[in-house]
Structure formats: structure tokens, C-alpha cells
Length: 454
Ligand SMILES: Nc1ncnc2c1ncn2[C@@H]1O[C@H](COP(=O)(O)OP(=O)(O)OP(=O)(O)O)[C@@H](O)[C@H]1O
Image (cartoon, rainbow, N blue to C red; front, side, top):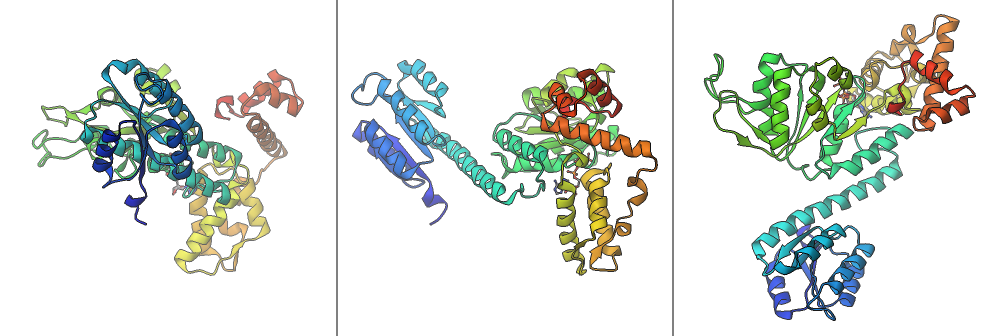
């Protein structure tokens, strides 16, 4: 069956003529089901689970009121919470339409229905329905496979991150991703984009730290021909290229004050101006920003605008460093090994026990990026089927030299794990570790651990 043929719609309308007209208008795009009362509507919903539904609020036995329509809405949503319901309502029933939307209807349309407008609303509603279905399917797959497609991870922290990504992806909320260098912030941004309604439009990353401040404005917003000495032709900026899609602003903390102001304006009204341009251009862009800096500290120092921070930080996602992800370094190492062995055609099968131990113990300051490049090197250097510790070239950095260093390392690891188990609750973590709360606070300070990151 083709994708198109599987789209189904239920029309709930007690006037037979209107029902027929709507069927006629929609049959090309949808499998149309029809009901004239609540009982039939419920039956059809349970049997066919339609993606979208139109619902006339005035149904028998209350054709002039809305009680039966609202009851139908409630019961359908109970059984089919993902079905997107568009309320069809008379002009004088606005309050009821609003009530219906508050109770979970997707949208409403006034009578007499403008069929072309309704088709657009239905298409949007259906896309959202299909995306939610797809995300649920992916979630099921992930739960079976213990992975999130391209983002590998089985640790509690990463599983929490995956469900956060799923929850926010279909909203248009701006997201600020924080985390050390190399933890996978860009991968997270891409995963959000890929699960959003914008997924068929561009995902445009830009690294604000890699481009000199003087060029960054025209990289972001574009320029007109002749705007400055080297502007020989018109250039379309990244924001415009990301129209209808997602712009990923990496290393956001590096942005200077003038560009912060321009960015804020674009975030507020989705309008930009090319450098040297005279007319504002309307865009429709979701922004995901990332930083490995402490932006709150930058705000205190007057380096970063607070209003811009609030705009970008509607949702905050912290990606934990690799050393705080239980067994993930092992899982990732195996995955990278398989990938590079295949790529280079080398018969490398795995790691010696000592190499595995080293991968677990090492602190990975460069996070997944460092792990990836170490495994790449090891696959090339290894002279046997199993990778040995020296192939990884890490030993010098990971082995504690003194007893004190070893004690510190284990102390830090135990505190991190206790905070992790207790979602950052210091009192509970202190109880588990059998120390007082103030002692744990002191130790957290010593190891530079913040409870907000758990
Ligand atoms: N969980 C993961 N699973 C698989 N690959 C990963 C994972 N996390 C990161 N990587 C890989 O590690 C490298 C670094 O990831 P990424 O560029 O997303 O990090 P980042 O946090 O954005 O880094 P930076 O702060 O330096 O911009 C990439 O090659 C990415 O594909």
C-alpha cells in the first residue's frame, strides 16, 4: 500500500449533505470514514485509528448545543490520544471551540468550512500525527536495541537525555545545549532536528568560534553585493539557508556584543537584514545553541546579554562528560572499533582485558571525540587481532602517579555516582555515602561538581 493510501480521516458530522461534500473534497488525499453520531465515531476510531478527524460539535441528541460534541472529543482522545481533531464550529460558538482546544483538540475551523483552508490545516495536523507515530516507533526500537540511532549510549544519564530529546523535538522551543568539548552536543542538536516537523528542511550548523567576528555577521545574515570591499556578489547567510529548518549555533558563548543584539532581534521577530540590505526578510527558523562555557558567568561579567540567554535557553539540555556515563566508553569503543576495522579492512576483533580496563579508568578529557580518534589510531597501529593498552597511547595520562591522586580519583567517582543515582539530591547522596551534607558540599567544591548537572 502506498504512503498516501494509508492516510485516514474520520468526518464526524450529522448533516448528511455536508458529510458527502467533505468526503468528495478529501477522498483524493485520504481514506475517508464517516460518522453522524458519537457511537459510530467511537466505533470507527477504535477499529481504524484515523490520523485526523473533523468534529462538528453539534451532534444529536444535542444538535444545537455542544455537549455531545465535547463528550465525543473526550472519549475519542481517551482511546486515540494521538488522533488530531479539528473542531468545526459556528461563529457564535467560539467559547466552546476554545474549550475543545483546551481539552485536547488540535485546532478549530468556522462554518461554513473553507475547504482549501481546511485541507491545509489537515495536512499540518496529519504531518504532526505521522511524526509522533514515527517517534513512538523509533522509541520502541531504541528500547529494544538500547541505542538512539546515531547517538550511542546505554547509561542512565544518556537514557534520560534521549527521552528529553523525544519530548521536546516536536515543539518549536529554543534549546540551549551545554557540555564539555566533544561530548556530542552537535549530535544531540541534529537528533532534535531529525525528530521535528522541520526534518525535511535544512539543518545548518555554524561554529561561532571558528569564524572571525568581522566575517561572522555576513556568514550568519548574508550580505548584498557591494556591502563592503570584498562583497562582489550577494551572499545568502546561514539563517536564511536554514529557513523552515533548524540553525545550530555552536560555541555560542564566543559571540560579541553587536552580533548578540542582532541575533536577539532575529529571535524575537524572525526577521533578518542582510549586511548592506535595505529590506527586512522574514524567516522561519528554530534555533538550537550550544556552548561549553558557563554563560551565566559570562552574563555576570557583562560579556553575554541576559535577554538573549533567556531566549536561547527556553529548554536546557546538559550532555554529561563521558567519564560520568557508566559503561558507555566501552560500548562506544566497540562501536568505533567495528566501524574503523571495516573502513580500513583490518582484521581487528576487540580489546585485550587490560585495554578494556584502561578505557574504563581513563578520564577522557576530550570526551567521545578523543575516544573516537584514539580508537581510530589503535585500529591502524595494532599488530594483533586484539587492541592492547599501548595501541591506545593513553597510559601516561590515566595511571595515577601518587596514592593521593588515586584516592582523589576514586573519591570523585563515588561522589559522582551517588549524585547521579539521586538526581543531584545532595542530602540523599550524603546519606548514602555516610558523610554529612556540609562535608559533601565541600567535597563537591573540591572536585568541581555541581548538583545541577545531575
Ligand atoms: N554518543 C555518541 N555516539 C556516537 N558518536 C558520538 C557520540 N557522541 C559524540 N560522538 C562523535 O564524537 C564527535 C564529537 O561530537 P560533537 O561534534 O557532536 O561534539 P560537540 O560536543 O558538539 O563538540 P564541540 O564542543 O567541540 O563542538 C563526533 O564525531 C560525533 O559523531
